[in-house]
Amino acid sequence: MTLMVWNDNLITGIDIVDQQHRGLLDLINEVGPLLARYSHEHVQDVSPLLQHLLDYAAVHFQTEEGLMASHGLHPAGLRHHQQTHAGFVQKVQEMVGGIASGSGVTGNQLLSFLASWLVLHILGEDQAMARQFRAMANGLDAEHAYVEAAGDLLDPAPAALSQSFSDLYSTLTRQYLELDDVRREIELYNQHLENQVRERTAELERSRDAAQAANVAKSRFLGTMSHELRTPMNAIVGYSSLLRDGGLGSQQKTLAEKIVSSSMHLLGIINTVVEYARLDAGQPGDLAGETFKLKPLLDEACHEAFAKARGKGLTATLELEPGLPDSVRGDRRHLAFILGQFASNASKFTEKGFIRLLAKTLGRDDTGAVKLHFDVVDSGIGISPEDQTRLFAAFDQLDDRPNRKYEGIGLGLAMARQLAHVMGGEVGLESQPGTGSRFWLELSLSEIVVPVEMPQPEPAPAPHSNRPSTASGQVKTPITATLKLLEKLLANDDTRATEVFSKAGPHLRRNFGDRIDLLSQQINGFEYDRALQTLRVMIADQHPLSEDKP
Image 1 (tube, helix red, strand yellow):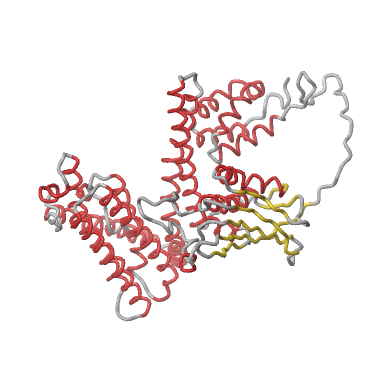
Image 2 (cartoon, helix red, strand yellow):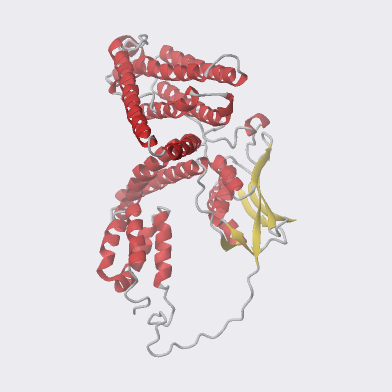
């Protein structure tokens, strides 16, 4: 059931602050049902959600304080926010500790504190902050803005407070009536199938309670982020790339290139957050069991980081010990991500010296798979022992100041650990300040022995052969392989889908005819989610006119 509802009185006019307020409100609604019926049996359900709430609140508090500091708001307002934020965290931690120890604090008391604090803080202190921002935007300095905007008036407006509680009452009343309607329906049905309904209702309640905590946040986050952010970002990347390559003058082309670069960077961040949300919700996606050569994979994983390192004057090397398997089977993409993240951090935090990626074997496990050990070593700034415990936590950065030197959203290493666990491996680090760091990954992969075959002469194609070929005699990529590649790129929102389709379009049209028009329109409009559905329908419903039509 929903406890808190959003209304216009809660809007401050500061977009990022309002978005995060909505996020806090959603988290309180999520944790509310568990707190309302909290007992020691539910501690495993409640604790992760409360920690997630505290982590999110910490990010929000940093955002507000960073905005106030960067805009030069009156120091009194900043100090008050800092004190209020710190008091909130301390109070929640005290109450959580009281609940866990059974010292008399109840889940309802904590829920009441969270809901009332958020409403009163937004309607009072945050509205005072917003008034000062607007006054300064109109030309007042911080001192006069504090006076004119009543920066010291921190109590909520009575009308706004009344509206919030009226909305709360209306929401709870509506939900109660809805629940009552459901109850009456169940009672009527129970007259005929009492035993079956009782058993089924108990099963549904158990399933609902078990899945609710994970599914609410996962569904909301993935649905919004995947469609509302990734889809338009793909269009921005695609159209700005077309603009850049469309014969612009040098100055305009430079500006277009910056748009493309920034859009790609933002799309990468979005994809990282969505991928983390899947992992955090226990949905790692398909773990690809594919065969790949290990050496090229390592080259690919560290290529970008090594290039940046060498651009800074660092020595960047890949060192492979004897005995490494040539080909293995496992999740190529996730392995490359983990090692690439380690290499990227090494390059980012090293100003002189070297970074290295080392790989070796540690024998075989009980199943006969090869135990592989990877190290990414650098001569960078190093990490203190107390900070190492925070390093693999989500959204946590060792330097979280608004004007910090090193960029990032604090998800890379958290994802690396989760992905390693999904693949049955483990990650860790060794480091000391000033002496560099060593990040390591251990996991087992099946060795694949590829038989060596002697090259055979290519027979000349028989007359009227159906074998795909070009005028030069070279074999073309079969239509099925093209369709599989295109489907994979569309499923991953990979902008290379547009390029692949552009090259394969005539070939596909010869095989599918006018059925390709809708797919062409969707791909060229960067509507990859719709294009994927169209492609799958085409593959499922109809066969190509000719698999290898000349």
